[in-house]
Amino acid sequence: MSIPLVTRFAPSPTGSLHLGNARTAFFSYLWARKSGGRFLLRIEDTDVDRSQTRFTDELIKDLRWLGLDWDEGPDVGGPAAPYSQAQRGDVYRGMYQRLEHKGAVYPCYCSAAELELSRKLQRSSGKPPRYAGTCRALNAAERADREAQGLRPTLRFAVPADVIIEFVDTVHGPQRFLSADMGDFIIRREDGTAAFFFCNAVDDALMGVTQVLRGDDHLTNTPRQLLLLDALGLKRPAYGHVGLLVGADGTPLSKRHGSKSVQEFRQRGFLSAAVLNQLYRLGHTGDHDGWLALADMPEHFRPEHLGRSPARFDEAQLLHWQKESLGRMTDAEVGAWLGAAGDTDFVALVRHNIVLPADAQPWIAAIRGELAPLGEAEQRIVAHAGPAFFRAAVAALGEAGQDWKLLTSLVRDHTGRKGADLFMPLRVALTGQAHGPELAPLLKMMNPATARQRLEVHAQNP
Image 1 (cartoon, rainbow, N blue to C red):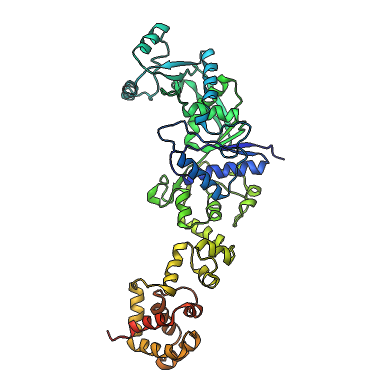
Image 2 (cartoon, rainbow, N blue to C red):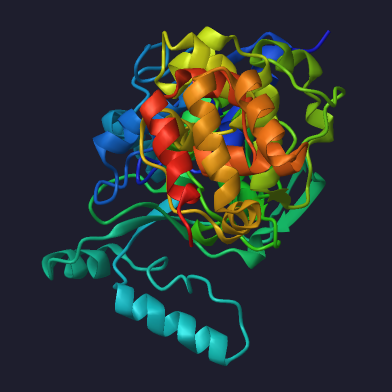
C-alpha cells in the first residue's frame, strides 16, 4: 500500500491559468488522491507588482471547473493557513532571522546596473554569469556607509563552498549539483518581499508537503532550495520535474498554437472531461487507454510513468476526447451545454453533428435564421441540379408540406433524380450545407414559408 502523500499546486496569480500549469495541478491532485493523501492549493503572490486578485479568482474558478478540489487552500483554510504568501510575511521574517543568526545570509547593495555589468564581464571572459559575491565580505562600517547613502539592500543566501547537493528526482532519477557552480542568490527583495527560491521552499516544508511536482524548467532551482532547507533545519520534500508542454510542432506552447489557457478552452465550449482526458495523456502513460471519468483517474494514474521529454499538445487530440465526452452526455446535459435547455427535439437532432457549441449555430440558422452565402462546392451542387429541379421542388413542397418522404417522392417523380442527385441539392438549398442532421425532422422544425423561399431562390433562371 502506498504512503499517503501531501502534494500541492502553487501558482502565481500573474495571468490566466496556462494549460501546462493546469496539467501540473492535475497530476499533483491525482498523485495525492491515489495515495490517499492530501492536495493543497497555495497562492504565491509575493510579486506585488504583477499579482492580481482577479487572477486568483479566475484560477480557482478554472480549477473548480476542471473538477479538482483541495484539502487546504485560501478559500477552505487549513492547519498551515494562511495559504496566500502575501499574508505570510511574519513567517518569512522569522526564517530570515534564523538564517542571520547562523551567518548564512548577508545584505547586498549592488544595483541592477552593477549586476548587469558584472554579468557582461563574466560572459566576455567565457565564464557563466553568476553573482560575484561583491557584498559578501563587507564589514559593518562598509554596510553602514551604504545604508547612510539610502541604499536598500536585498538579502542573499551565502552558498557554501565545495558542497555537493544530491537528490533523487522522482521523474529524472539521481541528480548531482556542485555549489561551486552557483552564485549567492537573493531570498528577499529590496522592497522586503520574499523571493521565489525562499518562500516556495519554506512553505513546502512548513505545510508538510512531501512530494513536489513541477515542470523541468525548475530542476536547476532545486539544489538552491535544498541548501536553504538544510540551513534552516527544515525537512526536504521529494521533487519531481516533468517535461514541459509544447505545441504539435515541438515549440513551446504559445498563442500561435491557438488557445493556451484553461479559460479560453472553457469559453470555446470544451468540456472539462475532454480537457482532463487530454492532459492525462500528455507526459504520462496510464494503464487504461480509453476515456476515463475524473473519479476513476487516480486508480489508473502511474507516477512512475511521468515523462521526462516535452509533451506535445495537439488540439486534434483534444477534439477526439471532446467527442468521446459528448457521447456520454444525456440530451438534457447537451442542451444545457448548448444553452438550448428544453429544446429536446433540436438537441437530439444536432448533437451528433457538433463538437463545440459554435458548430450548432449553422443549424440554428437553418431552422430559424438566415443562411450564410453558399461555399463553392455547394454552389456547384445547386448549379448542377438546375432551376428546373428547384421549380419541381417548389411545386412538390406545396403539395407535401413538411412531409419529407412525400416531398422527395414527388420531386423524384417529376425529375427522375434519385440518390445523392436528389437529396444533395435539396439539403444544400434548405440548409446551406452539404452534410448534417437528418432532413426529415429538420424540415418539420423549419417554417414552411422559409423552406419555400429557399427553394424559390434557386428556381429562378440564371
